[in-house]
Amino acid sequence: MVNPYKDLDKGKKAQVELMFNNIAKKYDFLNHTLSMGIDRLWRKKAIKLLKPLKPKKILDIATGTGDFALANLKLNPDKVIGIDISTEMLAVGRKKIAKKNLKHKIELFEGDSEDIQFDDNSFDAITVAFGVRNFENLEKGLSEMNRVVRPGGKVLVLEFSKPRKFPVKQIYNFYFFRILPFWGRMFSKDASAYTYLPESVDAFPDGNDFLKIYENCGFTDTKQIKLSFGIASIYIGSKAMQ
Image 1 (cartoon, rainbow, N blue to C red):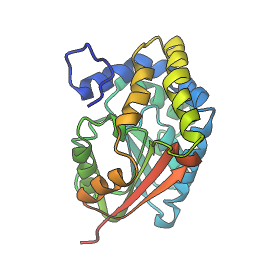
Image 2 (tube, helix red, strand yellow; image 1 turned 90 degrees about the vertical axis):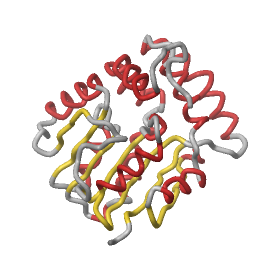
Image 3 (cartoon, rainbow, N blue to C red; image 1 turned 120 degrees about the vertical axis):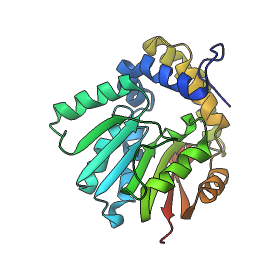
């Protein structure tokens, strides 16, 4: 298991919470700058995959500062609920939502993705962007998503993956392991956060390995859609009809 702070005697969940609290005020700037804005395009593509479902109630897990929760409004839902363990990230997200006068459409709550506080079959769709890597127990988190989404509903995961073809693999590795940690440390003032990012991506079971875990947690009709030559992937699955 890869943890953000290797010399800290705390579990992964507590360390991830601490890390995001530390970088919350710089997170949006760094996220969009270091990804050169491509993360916004990935979110747009992911949201389009949910359009045929016409979800009216959506849960965004590991919502952070609310970017994916806001993107979900393109689906014209009645309500989007976001949960995250980082109080500081949620504070930034709530300010963004209030500034856009969208508090009636989006609500953000402190919540544990591995112990979701909502009832079974509560949501039409669930989204999570760049969050499942940070779960302490991936299977538990995915099983919880399966529990709270309704039968026939969909769960969509947007996550970094590892490109395998030359020269994208070599360019990606150089940027991810050399350039990104340097600039991340410079601007976030957290020496570990942007070293943890590439390490956690490298350790994450992407591609078919993730699809197998997805299916073991109860999802059907699972599919991986690669983005930008495999730098990121969308994983989508459905909850079986009862």
